[in-house]
Structures are given as C-alpha cells and as structure tokens.
Length: 254
Image 1 (cartoon, rainbow, N blue to C red):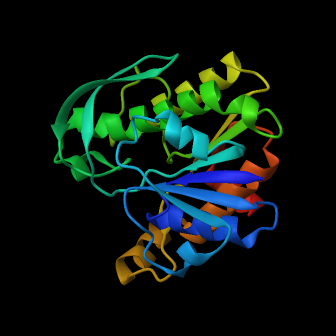
Image 2 (cartoon, rainbow, N blue to C red; image 1 turned 45 degrees about the vertical axis):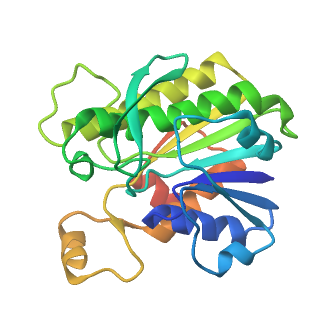
C-alpha cells in the first residue's frame, strides 16, 4: 500500500511516519510538508518528501505524484503558515484568493493563531476537507483498491452538533466535529471510493514527557504519541468497525 501523511513534523505525525516506515504493508509513504524532515528518514527508500506550501490547494502536478495512494493520514500539527478566507460546504472546500495572514500551520488550537478564528478555522477544517475532496475526485479510481481511506486525528470532546452549547474549548471542539462530519458525509456520497475514520485522543503524551505532563496524567489519563500514531496506521491499513474511535478504544486496540 502507498500512503500520504500530512503533519509529519508534529508530535503525533512524527510517530505516524515511524509506524508507516516500520510496517511492511506500506511500500511507499509520501510526506507532504512545508519544510524538510531534517533527519535520516528522508534517506529511507520508502519515504518521499513533497514540499508544498498551500494546504488548501492541490494542483494536478501534486496529485499526479500521489497517484496510487490508498491511505491518507492527517494530523493537524501546529506549525505556522499561510491562510486564506474560507467558504466550506459539505460537498467541497472552497478557498478565496485573498491571503489574510502569514502564520504557518495545518491545524491547532485557537491561541496558535493569535485568536484569529478565521485563520484557525481555515487550518482546522478547510485544509483536511480540501485534501479529502481532491483525493476523492482525482485519486480514488487510480488506487489499486479503487478506494481512498482517510484517517483524521481529531480530539477528545469533538462535537459534531454546531448548535450545542459548549462550556470549554468550544471553537476547537466544533471545528473537529465539523471536519469529522464532512469526512463522513463525503464517505456516504462516495461509497466504495472513500472511507473516513476519526480518532479522538485526549492528552497526548510525548515520549519523554516533562514533569507537568506526568502530573496531568494523574488527573486525566492520556495516550502516548507513539500509541496514537500506531493506531492511526493500523486503522488505515485494516479499517475499523466504527468511524469514530475514542481514546479508550484506541488504547484497547493498540
């Protein structure tokens, strides 16, 4: 199988890439990123790094390089990048041409965008939805299975109901929920050509957590970045019985 990763430089995305390299079931992994990985994994014959600056646009030359993929693994890393005003619909993600910021990211919490909701929304919702739409339209029929499987790293307490009153992290939870809903709707619109799965980790623990993170796990049990990455790849390879997996379910299948 061939796979593509978005967000490979982030905490979880880094482990997603490691898991892809480790399994013999994946023969090629494309890393779409704004900057180089900066480590020896770039020399791995399975890894093909593709530098790309605008995650809302997927030109044909990029899609041609990705022909044959059956799996997309999306983790919203918190690097900062160019964003634009976005109009998102359930059938496609549409981006206007006027840039509104110079921050670099493909996701993250609102504070990472200087509390600019338009920019944060673009990165958290429009980017993965634009990628999924482009892949269904241009790549699904070219994969060996005739299908693209999309695994989205969402988050604990993601809320698909936009009308529900939320008392904490409202914007971030709604954005994650909106993206989950978009992906599931796309899967229903293209049965057999597109499958979507969302994982909802809570506290993601780095491999060598600082004392503050260790203390936090006593209050709210977490999941390691390595576990999260491994689960995402496993679901990407084998699918799963439900479309959304909470942290407890992720830990059970790791």
